[in-house]
Image (cartoon, rainbow, N blue to C red; front, side, top):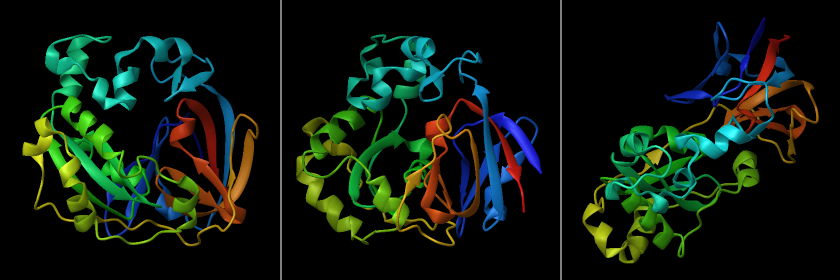
Length: 265
């Protein structure tokens, strides 16, 4: 079986184990069914997720020109505290920014390798936690806009990490934490203007990933350097495909790459 298409982040469904799907031109592949099977990935060309041109991908699946211009690549995406739609101030496209920024957002703790604080739209729960490879997570606040969530994250990351150790996550070097207790420890550091949105009754959310075998050593697959890869799929966690011999492939980091994807055995 062979498929061709431009890579986008894997779609997920949270069930007893997370179900993963890759979309191609004419097909959707249920990746869980390919565990312990040999897969080949061939890099064909680039295809910017915005303009569709065969131009080298810069970030987030976009070519450089698009990344500098389109509203869904503004600085406020990575830095929610820079959101200004609540002030009716435009960054790149006010209508788009109002649509995205002025909706409920969740400030959360997620534990994938260590406990970290993060921000996402409420509609992206639990997808965001799955994408980070978190085995447990909990909501701290639900704010009415992205700005309030962003300033809360800035305040809390002085007291808790805001990054995931992806290597530890993929090796499954994890430690279970009582996230209710961790949340309570951070309550006093929430900015005054966001305190009213604290979620005192939210419960810990647990996630199981489809992994047969966790690696002990890791080697990242870079399709620009190795445009023809073949290996046996041993697991899927976060946005990574985990192959035998510790090879891991970050699908999301390769958005905008057109590939041939072949199931060999």
